[in-house]
Image 1 (spheres, one colour):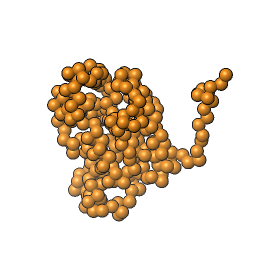
Image 2: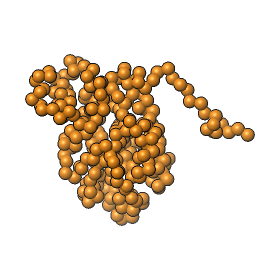
Image 3: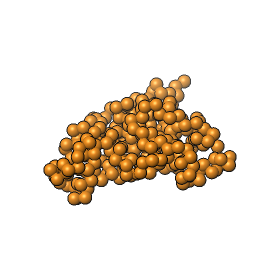
Image 4: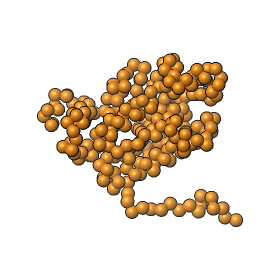
Length: 239
């Protein structure tokens, strides 16, 4: 008998609009910026601030965050190793669809296992994947403990908690490492922009600065100069 759920009987459609065409009309390169690190390391804080900066510069973005996804799409999954693996796989597939739409996607997930992060990279394409290791010592993460989860994990109330009774596998070769134990949020975002803006290539040259307000224009120029390590004294010359 033939099952309706047999993958051999699935035939994805081919649209008449390509990813390149969507990127062209949005005036940007779609990328997945993947934040990984311990709970409390600052992943969500940096992702929120970075998205705000990119949005102010005219990027079309979307932020996928662990708690938000767990409360909707993945609310059926547990926090066992199997549940975590499936959680990250689904996020990778969602990100792939959003990249195909031409959007710059930011994802903030503990994603403790190297194999899962590599799977996401394979799903979206290595050329589209920017891995950000948010590096903070567990002692600092525990001191922050905004959600009170470390305290509960130490008391045995939360099981399979990364860093306590479940491992975190440090990335071997992240695209950028942000040490939030020593860097401020502002310094961290500046470092990230130096990595991300150059990935936009020729699209940076086709943005429309005259449509921006004065403050947004100044921020745009500062970030652009930072990205290419140029002196800020050039701003009046460029404007």
